[in-house]
Image (cartoon, rainbow, N blue to C red; front, side, top):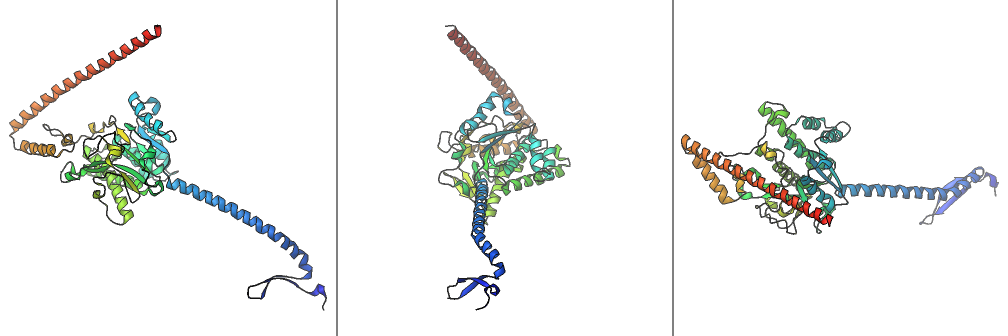
Length: 426
């Protein structure tokens, strides 16, 4: 037997094949250190396991957080208006308040004419998405309706949540926007049908507007490519209009149909259909959403039937606000932009949109317009004069009725006030 001090000590472990494997070999002078390391090894392994567990837990928590943020709609409600809520007229206040009352767990925010540019500069400027082209375009625009359309798309791209116009009343809470049979995590966007009249696609005026989704109320998850694509498409279109009119962006003039097709419901609808088509890998047309009785989920976009966001229109089989599908009520009192972007208005027969998608009325309108073209200049002038006189009388009657109605309201208020004073004295 040799000197133990000259021997190496070998720690071995048995392998399944009966052989042994040297875990580490220690010389006698190193044995104390090796035993020290051996004693520390379980502690070190345990510490590493704890760290790994903590790291995994943190990673899982962050992953779950990101997943929640990505797959759930932000609990936010957005509106835009001329002034902030503290300065709302009573009419606007009462309608806007329905969103807060129906959705107490949602954040509510209004962007105004005073802070909208700061919002765009913050989120699309160099410290945000670094899109100076978007900031420049928004800053240069003067057409209020165009800026309003662009701003809602910008908000929905950056923030997500619910966008709704200032004159839209909440009938049901936002949680009802997604029926129980759908999983919120499978949905990126919720829209409702506005106009579903594809049988008018042949009409030169009504055709481009006969199939559309509502953009006065819709819901998005943040950073959806479709919203940014829509913004960029609108910008390219505006540049084209400015080039065609040979004026700067801030001096372009747009009629009603240009607004609808360029930035409004038609542009909104086309962008969504293109997005769905891209996701599914084949062209999706309006036929997919025509005549829906129930909601339909296609390519991550949940489309609600016409009653959800556009009930009571008198067309598109839109039903009434008393049905189970009706989520909102659009009062239209803020929709005054057509006065600065007039639509095609015949001097005698007015606007074909007044037919409200009634086929017989549209055919009659078209026939009358064509017949008018065959008249002599004298006959045309006579008809125009008669129409102007009818309009004048109609305006006078309407004005008298308005005065009478306001007087009646004033008397009613005074009567109630007197009754309250008498009750207080008693």
